[in-house]
Image 1 (cartoon, one colour):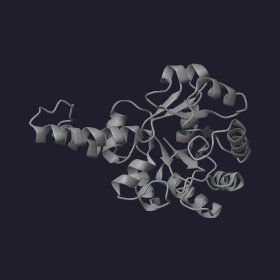
Image 2 (cartoon, rainbow, N blue to C red):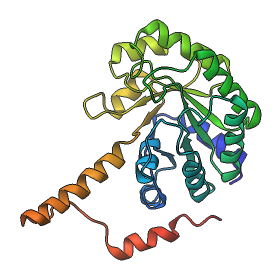
Image 3 (cartoon, rainbow, N blue to C red):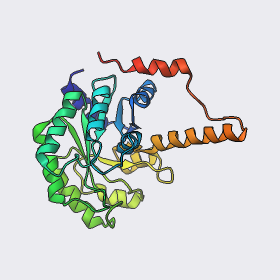
Image 4 (spheres, rainbow, N blue to C red):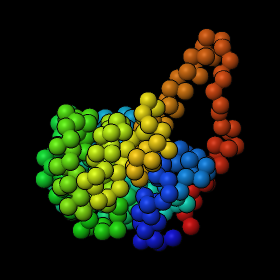
Length: 266
């Protein structure tokens, strides 16, 4: 499959009968394990990538780690979308260069967020400029434009709508509003969108099927899988220390070894 074909296939997944469930990997093994379960598209999680490297998420500190992971995973047997925080720069030209590198690595999508490490939001015009620069540099890359109004802002509908309007006009192929889970607010937001809406799954929020019924076209798991894996590892160690049996399931050694060959590029 060529890059252009991959991008077309990825965009089509946002218009299928059911919403695209996008699990997020943090390394080669997690991506290979998810691909083995039949997920046609897999994203990366910026928190997982950052935490694995001992760096802070959202602080524009993991550009090289993100590129390295994309080069390991891109062009494999699944469609790869990369969480690139805010593009690791406030210079649209540098963000565009990152996009070119990700596309060359085989990624078909990029996630760009307007939230900043200090809890503020980047100016909407600046984020729109980044989106436009990416679309010019790598027009076939699916740009999922994320606004953190429900995390870093006050969650006002007017602010969220204004930002999403600006991002759509700049060329975003989809928009992402993490922290939004109330069905009525999702429905209201959808009325003003011309591109697919991505929602972050939360265990306490609507199910995948319920989000699909509302009109959501993409559901991301974000850092959930990484955090579950981390919690399970600590729980297992505590069980052993306390003399309790380890009840969590674990992949076998040979099965895990096989993951190193699972994503061999064609």
